[in-house]
Image (cartoon, rainbow, N blue to C red; front, side, top):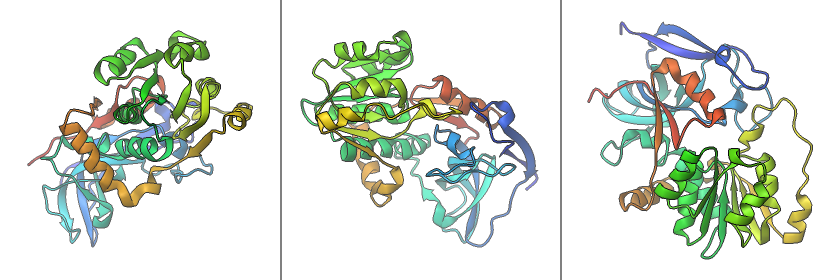
Length: 339
């Protein structure tokens, strides 16, 4: 194959917030698939906040990237060549692949994507890892029920937007924190949230919750942490459930703030706080995908994608996550299907 293969490497380990210098774009030859492997041409690349932790050489639930090695992400791509991988050229697949135009992977590490079910990009969003995270984190951990008040932070993002809608389907009152009036309108007008709070418009998060959740909080889906979570903890009801999915407010911190400060609330309210990883539910992924797909087809779940064009702009798409630039799932479009 005569084409070159653009690939992003981790140039250095950032101190605090990453910048463009954290990424290095190189050109290499397109790799040949080894035995049992497929060569995949990237169509869509996912960027996600958890990737910030992989840039640090520190203990985490995700293995750190090595400096000078390719970055990796969820990718939807088209099989170009198969060397006994169990796929045919033209098949659409999803997997954890390099930030590159082309990548190879064992066929056992790739999942088929049905392009007739939904746009293939949804395999990285509402029908992929973010949607499944929202599904299990809401239904299995936070467990909102009829009459409950459910609060979610990062509510206009890929996970939070779906989590809030699932809670609404359970009969809960849904309140979401987001970072702009546009996002609040998206939550209330398009997704059916009962109330949205623009956290950038107020420092009085408790006061905002008094208005949006006057009966207190029964279930909390936390993607952000920090002062907003402190405020939500002060509003927890007896037997409240807290699902800790992410702490994006701390991902670029060079020093961790003093804490925890709100644990006495958990004693008083007999609340349960549980962190979870989507991998814990791997044997049930298909269950979540089927249910989410049905809700989408029935018009019960809406989704939005923010798409950045061009592999060369993937770092900007990633950095924009920490500025709150995206609504819904942030994707990078790298190529078009040949089929």
